[in-house]
Length: 485
Image (cartoon, rainbow, N blue to C red; front, top):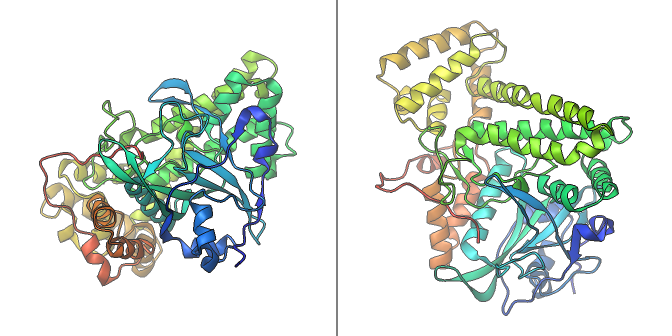
């Protein structure tokens, strides 16, 4: 039998028992490998051939627990659309932490391996379409340079899952820096002890922010560092038009990775009010609201940490409020830096933000495509901006060109900066749906394989990407996405 290369440690399983429940995946009838992320497997130190074998697929399906793993379901809570509730891994099992040859520690989690003690009314299973969707989007996000959990594999189960109709079941193997969430801290702060809260914070600091372990005010520094990472992350979302769709506190990681690709999608026409999620009827997590909701979630994180920030309640609140008050400035600095790069601007001028916002206003007013507008500006192809012929755009364009002329960098350097900052392609919603339909309905993976190849190098402006830049045919209905069940 080939050695797969699993090299598990289980540091999370050494934390207090109240943080999790030891729980094995529930075996499935007939596991079959649909897709394997070979480059990711190789980087994890795994043998690709062994993963594709019967024994390897059995692990990915939850039918076999690999040596060294200690499967568990994590407990956490969360504000879901503003309402606080007790949660937990209702359809996920953490196998353990893979230790790579570079000394990196990453979680290996199965998503969809059956009911757990936290399942509540759910069946703990997942359908093939949503699992392939997470695979596509998470790998696209990685290629875009956005911190994200990743997808190692998707396997079918040979069993149907019942939703509105019977759907083919599947399990996704997710790789993450960790699955510690804001909601994990909320859970311990609400139902745990002071010592358990301190233990969780120390563990998270050691795992994700080791540079501050020796800091006298390490818990305040911890809060500040998480704020910085989340501000940078959400700015990256905004810069490519990504809409998470369900920014509950249980879907915000302490590591600063994007997690839980349920009703997510990428914006076509620029509109800050864009919502895709079928359950976000009030637009709480609309594109334009994402920075505000990130700040709101981080305030909930700060509340959970209050007992560690200072023995004096008033002083603790003061410190937390001061830390949270910096989020907007940090976010705006990240966003402004990214938007300057998208427009080929290397230095700073006081009117840059107005120049950027004027362009966005023109895009919104004229229903211009977000990605293609910046792509067209990069290629100096104004006809494809969706704004050409508009007098206001001509005026804006003149101001932009004058702004570029005031910096020392050459036209070649400007174009290269723009190419590196503006993706030629994103996972267009209609292209993702096309790939999923072919894979799920016809068992045809060719469409998805081609899409994944195109998305693997999104900043390459190559001819074969042109057809993936086109917009969908006009539709009478709004595109909707659903939680990945």
